[in-house]
Amino acid sequence: MTDPDGKLEKPEIVQAQADKEKQLELKPGWREAFLVIVEKHRRLCVLQLLASAPGSWLDTGLLQSGLIELGQDVESGGVASMADWLGEAGLVQSRGESPRMLRLTERGLDVAEGRSRASGVAWADGRL
Image (tube, rainbow, N blue to C red):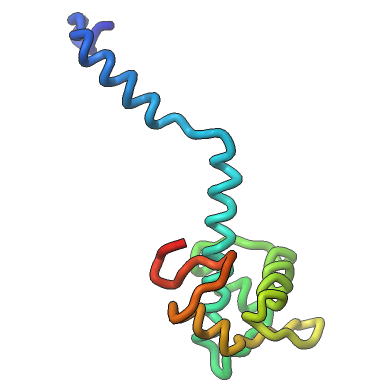
């Protein structure tokens, strides 16, 4: 191999570059694993948005707007399915249809503030 000046590179430099490139290769399934991490963070964002709301109640439209402001671009159907998931996990209560209102449970507040963990939700201190 040659460097930009046209000089031959030493074999150990070429090998070091090849090793570095190999380390940067993405493993099979990386995209799916990354999407799971994103979903965990979105769920935590919902809990934290609810924790900051008066009475811990918000409708799904406001939650969607809050998620977008936090850089979590999600469609309204995604917010609804996330609300279903959080409800099944006992982290939120839901009422109404249009608009659908969500309220943080005591357990949901503990998870939002990092006092407790819930499977499928990022930990509030940044760990998964």
